[in-house]
Amino acid sequence: MTIHPVQTDMQFKNYIGGKWIESRSGKTFASHNPANGELIGTLQASDTRDVDDAVNAASIAFEKWRKVPAPKRAELIYRVAEILRARKQEMGELLTREMGKVLPEALGDVQEAIDMALYMAGEGRRLNGMLVPSELPSKWAMAVRDPLGVVAAITPWNFPIAIPAWKMFPALICGNTVIWKPASDTPVLAARMIEIYEQAGFPPGVVNLVTGGGGTVGDALVAHPQVRLITFTGSTDIGRAVSIKAAQNLKRVSLEMGGKNAIIVMDDADLDLAVEGILWSAFGTSGQRCTACSRVIAHHAIKKQLLDKLVPRTAALRLGDGLLATTDVGPVINHRAAQKIHEYTEIARGEGAAILVGGAIATEGDLARGSFYQPTIFDNVTPTMRVAQEEIFGPSLSILAAQSLDDAIAINNRTNFGLSTSVYTSNVNRAFEAMRDVTTGIVYINAGTIGSEVQLPFGGTRGTGNGHREGGGAVVLDTFCEWKTIYVDYSGRLQRAQIDTDALVKTVL
Image (tube, rainbow, N blue to C red; front, side, top):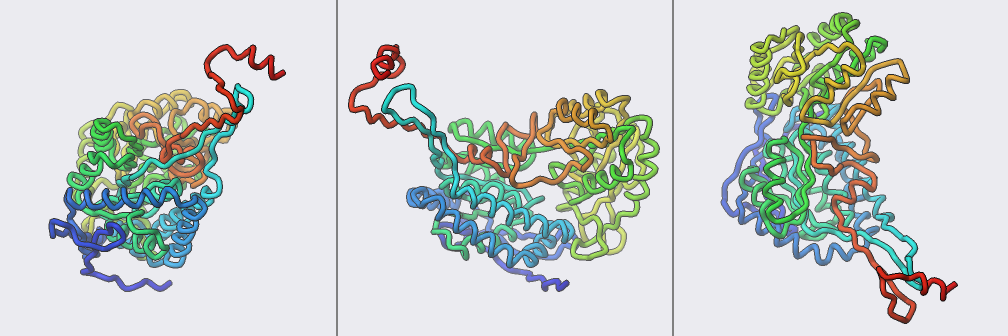
């Protein structure tokens, strides 16, 4: 495999109205590789004036874009998929450099965007509405989808290509125009992705990019009266603030937020299979997934046996640059994140948890140049401890004991989050009980908590979201559309609805 040489000290501009332009402020900020501090690029530190420019461009473009037939809109999305497929290796390597996840995961991130493009482009020849019989004769009754207008996509750094695809492709296929505000930790990837939209031939103003801080750019998008939908992925605290602020203008908000996901391991489980699922779910992407497993709820009868298998496997995980084939776990996103993860380690220690492995910022050798945290396992954790309730967003795993399946499900459900749960069992009755009683948006049986497929809804309950779903299926289209009900009366006479029509029906019969 050939690793492309890194391009450093490159300056990227905003993309507004089909043009690459500098921010009104003239200020910039830098993006760095979390594995070694290497400069990836310099970006525009935008302000409210740039947001106004982008909203104006998107509003103007919307009037033409909404009238483009959906199959024609789909053709442009298909082109994005083709270009992205051709550039998959290049984009995956850049993703590893800017975000840190190991290259196979980075390539999977890119593939997820390709899959989403292909799936949503297919909706261009569906966009199903409703056709139902009318209660009156010679009358046609139907409902069709209408686009909302300008959509603001505020996206995180942990899936910097896949998650924007989940938001932008359905928004575009429905006829909306988009302003993308990427995370400030991964803006170079966003700029490169916008280059692909441009190459695919999207008209000016249909897709726009504004980089900068969430407190400036994000807040301005949320407050702007011409932005009709905010689709946000990030922390629950920020998502709550977004929802409150957007409500002042009665705009639609789609929130995908935190998780405190658990793997339940029963006493009849295949423990070797469970260990594989736990390792991947807890330490893949360095634990920086909203679906990452941060709790294992083990049946008391097999807890020790499970730990005897899990702890040495965890200790053997190799930290390093995600571009190296020898790396199992890459860096966390930045030094602040590493410090926050360690603060939770100290909290766990103070609450009485036992650290079985890890528990420190990694500083040996080349790791000192980056932001690395040792994969960590806490034992003797009780359900009310903070490490069992709060999202850590790092390679930190708590082990809890349960007396039965009912006990395990109750422990699982008693958090403020409800995204993903996994249950390992060989008993089909237990599996179906868990599928019925677990109150998270995603349930896995005999697989880890992470992973999704684009043809199914993705999202969670409680503090994980506000009821909308991302991913695929007709469900996600409802987020990006208004329903318009249409009646066509071709009877040639006044037919009054909501009155007694029995006599009229009798005349027809």
